Structure formats: C-alpha cells, structure tokens
Length: 351
Image 1 (tube, rainbow, N blue to C red):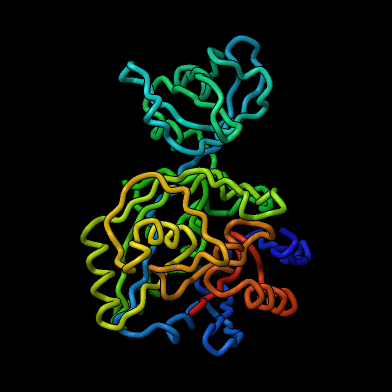
Image 2: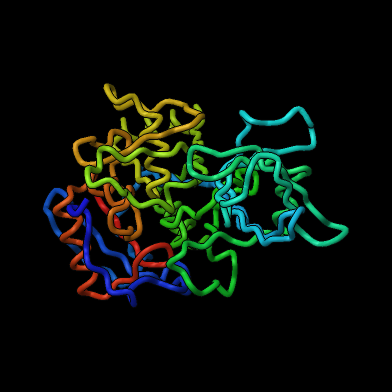
C-alpha cells in the first residue's frame, strides 16, 4: 500500500467547512490531456458541465450516530458509533430495532449485557446480542431509535476533525433526504453544493438524479494489508430505482455524461451497472464493491470528489478512474498549493 501513500502536512486537514459551501477551491483533472487546472471556487464547476450532463448525488442523510450511555449493571461509561441497521437480526419483539455498532470500551460487552442511554424518564435501553464481523457488536434497542437519536445522539465526525462545526448541518448535504436517514458519515463531495448553485446548474440544462448509499464502516477503515487486493470491504446498503436508471441510460445515449458526486454515488452506480454492456440497471441491496486500478469504472463519465486519506479505499477508487500516477501527481500539487484536505476540505473534478 506504499504505492497509495503521500505526505500531508497536518495543518492542511480542514477543521471547518468553507463559508459559503461553494467557496471551497476546485482542482480540475483533465484525464485526456493529463492537465491539472486550479480554480479558485467550487462555483466554477459550472464551466466544466454542459447541457445534457447529469449530476448523480447520494441523498442519504447522516444520522446523529454517536451515542453515549452506561452499563446498567456497573454504571460504566459506554460509547456507540452506530454503523447500520441489521434487519436480518431483528428480534421477535416488534418494539426492538437491531443495529451494528462500534463499541467503546469493547471489553466486557458480552451477549446479554444491558445498556442505558438518555436521561431518567426518557431512557432508551438496549441489549448486546453478540459480535459483528466488523469487530463491533449487534445491539437491540428497545424502542423507536431514530427519534431518540435526534435528541440524544451526536454527529459522528471523523477522528481527524477535532473541532465541532458551529452548525451541525454543515456535515449534511443540502439535498439530504430525511426519508433516507442511515449514514454514519457524510457523502462529503456533496457538501460543496448550495441550493443556489444547484438551481444555476439546472438552468444550464444539467440534470439532477438521486441515489442512496448509507455510508458505513469502510469510511473509517484504512487498507491495512500491504497488498491492496487482499482488503475486504464491509457491505453497505445502496439503491437506484428503475426511473433513475432509465434516465441515466438515456442521457448517455444522447451524448450526456453521468457525473457522480462523490465516491458513494460512484459505488452505487458501479454496483448497478452491467459491466458487459455499460447499461445501468435498478438495484437495491448490499454492496461490497471494491474499485481499484485495473477495475475500470463503467457507469461514471466524470467525478466530483474530495481529497482522500492515504492508503484508503477511496484513494484507490479515484485512482481506478484517473490512474494512480496522475492522482498522486495531483495530490502532490494540491499539497504544494495548500489545498484543504478530507471531509471539510476542497474539491476535485475529474473528467
């Protein structure tokens, strides 16, 4: 994995999002001519999109997935990071919901352990069911969890962001769908869009389509194996409906480009495409799709993305699209020019 490493000064890790959202900088990669172009504002994305192109966004909404409580037996402090619902483990009780979660501390979290969250009179009790494949636990919550999280949960910011945003909604896209809540992290490429910029692009003849992927554990996990091909992706739930798939196929047939907004939209599209024909099909279910150089993208013609962590599956994904050497050249250029990196950082447009 040393082939997917780069040196990043810590001060270039963005701690706060740009204000306004579309004031972040934009680095443009022209694959055909191998050019790196610097633009001062994400608003300049309009110069690189043409009528007939379609932006595909991940409308999944981040839930306040970090929850603090205590063990019922000992009173010891407990922290959960909720990763994803686990409907296959739903209990027979209609009032219980099962989630997979990372647990701190993990020691002593044996099946049957009871946990308590909230305050007296508004408590949520939960039971540890057992270990999960991601080194977490399956937790059965005895009540309606999502409304409870709205009051007692905290936004699950990545560990490299040490300052809480002044407005929690800054870690949420402007098009996040409340009916599609379920992500443990934001699809951060979409954080650069404002309602005004979206309306401007639509007025230029740019299409706008929604898919869903609930962002889970792999956002937090580096590739630990030295041979990247040995990395095992955890599954994430994603969906694209038949109407959206049909519109995207028609746009490509008429000369438009499918422009994925972020790696999560990319993984959804690539999970749905017929790799032989390039036709995007409706899809809903779990995906473990792992994209890396040598496994070309079939459904995506251009990509809006952020700058990703070294040795991450996301860095491999963008390298699959633009080539490892070109991506690392662009990243080194971005470091030299003092771009801001990671979730609250600046953006790239690769075409």
